[in-house]
Length: 312
Image 1 (cartoon, one colour):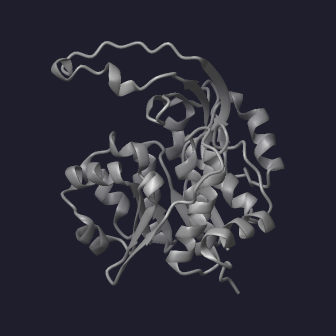
Image 2 (spheres, one colour):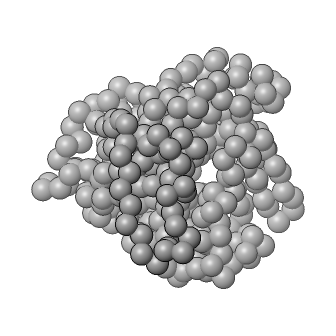
């Protein structure tokens, strides 16, 4: 099946703070915060939600289609993605703009403070699922909010199975936009913090979300993840990393592993376990695209934690 990945294409500016952010917040002065953190290092990395997800799918043997807008500075990045096994024929470069930029500082406890510059991502609404043939599964990951709603509407109209992944756009999107995005989704995926934002903005709890979408997946960092349907709830533990380097892109890697399992027709428990394994590889490296592994290495690591991968 063709897998289409939508979302931001960005460059990540990753900085490391040698302390803990929360130690510098004054509870009695939260109405007026003025802080500057001196970082020890900065790395510029290729990133963005869509390439991060697509990269994991490519590592797992898929050739996903990347449907996203990028800036004039995308040329070398496009070549790198093609070399990694990602089809960028649906990606469009926008003249006069740069790729989106993600500025993120991480402290010693993996807390993060980030800012995001939209750039060419603001033009994502120019793209359409009506130009895609034989799409079997799509993910709508963080992107221009209007484009995310548009894509969900198109997938419902065209009968395309889609995952709604609002991510950090939960903070930007309105309750109506979030509700429009999740309605009719095969699966909605958020982390535990985003779930609370989703609940506050839409008034929908877990049960109500499942009235609108088929499945709800909630990721909880080192506490693993939960897969909920109307019939059951399955909790999946996180895979212990060999080392912890950087959490950037870990959630995207999880989504790539989950989607690989879904594409193979695996039960959601197995798909979520594949997500846990994929996420840990990303956690062990700086940025969302620095890790690599073979299918044999992946299945061996899966077996180490969950037993043999039960795929036909």
